[in-house]
Amino acid sequence: MSLILRFLKISGRQWRWMSAGIILGVLVIAANSLLMAISGWFIASMAVSGVTGASFNYFFPSATIRFLAIARTVGRYAERLVTHEATFRILAELRVWLFKKLIPLTPASLERYSGGDVTGRLRADIDAMETLYLRIIAPMATGVVSMVGGVVFIACFSLSSATAMFLFLLLTGVGLPLLVGRFSEAPGKRSALLAADLRNRVTDGIQGLEELVLLGAVERQAAFVDDLSSDLIDEQQRLAGINGFSIAGMVFFAGSAVAAVLVTAGTEVAALQVSPPNLVMLLLFSAAIFESVGQLPPALNLFPAVRESSARIFELSDAPIPVPDAALITSMPVDNAIRFTNVSASYLAGSGVLHDFSLTVPPGGSVVLTGGSGAGKSLLLEVLLRFRNYQGSVTVGGAEITALPKESLLKLIAAVPQRPHLFNGSIRDNILLGNPSASDELLRSAVYDSCLESWIDGLPDGLDTQVGLNGSAVSGGEGRRIALARALVKNAPILLLDEPTESLDLQTELELVSRLKQRFRNLPGCTIMVVSHRPACLFLGDLTIRITSVPCNIP
Image (cartoon, rainbow, N blue to C red):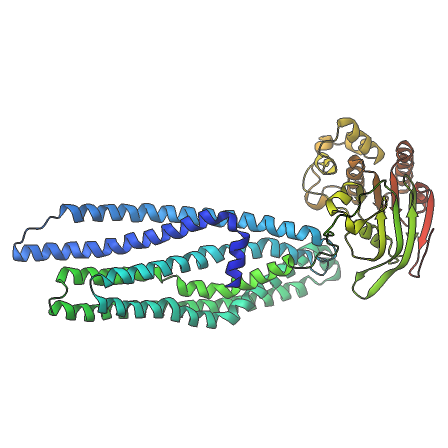
C-alpha cells in the first residue's frame, strides 16, 4: 500500500487521466454485463410471450441492447486509449522526477553503482512501473467498484443469489489474489533482481568488450550472461505456472458462482418469487460480472516484481545528498577569491585523502596543483564544486560554499573535469552547453583558445560535425578540447581545469598552454585553479603547489 501511495504522490499531476481510465473501465464492465443480462432476459421474455400469447414491447429492450453493444465497443477503445495515455504520461513524469533526484547525488552518491545499473534503474525499472497503474492499480480499482455494483444489481432481484455471488466474488477477487500474491512473492522478487543483474552484466560486457577480447575473456562473460538468462527463465516459468493456477481458479469459481445463482434463484422461480426471464438474466449477468475480478490475481502475480523495481528506484531517490543546501542563506560572495581552511575530505567513507589542507587563491589569482596520483588534487576541485562533503571551511568570496545555493555557486564556476563527457550532438551543441546564448565572437574565441580552429576548419561540416555517442567520432584529445571550449565559452569568474592537456601531443599541448596563458592575461579578474601532472601546465599558474598525502598548509 505504501508503494501505491508513493506512486500516486509522484504521478499526482496525471490523476485526471488515471481516474478517467478507471471510470471508463467500470463503464465498460457495466455495459458488457448489462448487455449479457438484458439480452438473456429479452430472449427469454420473447419465448415466454410466444408461448403464452401475451403482448410484449420489444422496441425498448432491443434499442437498449444495441446501445449497450455500441457503448461497450466505444468504451473499450476509449478505455484502452485513456489508460495507455495515462501510462505514457506517468512514465514521462517518473523519468523526469528520478533524473532530478539523481542530479544532486552526482558523483559521490552514485559512484558505488555501475553505469549499467544506474541506466537500468532510470530506464528498465522506470518502464516496469507502467505495470503498476496499467495492470495493478486500474484493474484493482475497477474490479472493486464493479464487484460492489454487480452484487447490488443482483440483490435487486434476488437477495440469496446476491449473497452467493458476493461470497464467490470475494473468493475470486480477494482470496485467490492473496494466495497468488504469496506464491509469487519469492519468484517475482528474484526475477526483478535477476533481470537487473542481467542488464548490468550485458551493459558492462558491451562497454568493456575491447578489453574482454584482448584478455580472451569473452566466453567467460558469455557464460555468466547465459547462466543469468537461464535463472531468469526459470523464475519466469514459475510465475507463469502460478498465473496458470490463478486462471484455473478463476474459471472454477466463476462456474461455481453461476451454479450457485442457478440453485438459489431457481428455487425462488419455483416459489414464484423470481420470473423465469429474470433467472436467465441473473445467470448471464453473473457470468459476465466475473470480468471485473478476472485481472486481480494476475495483478498480484506481477506486484512482487514491480515492488522490487520500485525499491531499486527509491533506493536512488532517497539517497542522502552529499552536500545539501543550507536552510538559511547567511551571506553572498563579494568577489571570486577561493579559500580552503583545514579541509579534510575523501572519496570513500573512512579513507582520507585530504587532511587539514589550507590554501588561499586571491581574486584573479591562478594556481597549479600537482602531485602524485591519489593525493587529492581532483578531489579538491570536487569539494569546491560541492560534489563531495568535507570538514573544515571552503569559501568563495568570503561566503561558505555550503551556505550558498548550489545553483548560485555553479554559476560562478566553469570546469573541465578529468573525464569530460560529450553528448550525442554536434561540436557546436556540445560547446554551447556552457553558454547557449554565447555570441559568435565568444564562440570563436573559445574555439581558438582551445586549439580547435584548424581541426574544425578541415571538417566538411565544421562546427556542425557530429561527435557521436559519448564522443565516439572524435579522439580523446579532440574531445577534451571541446570540453575546454565549453568551459571557456561560459566566461565564468572562476575556472577549474583538471588535466586540460591530457591526450595531447607535445606540440599541441605547448600551443594550447600558450593560448590559455594569453587568454588569462586578457581576463585578469578570473580566478583559476589547474590540476595537472604535465610540466607544460605549470606555466598556467602564478603559484605551483605540490599536494601530498600528508597534512599540507599553504598561506
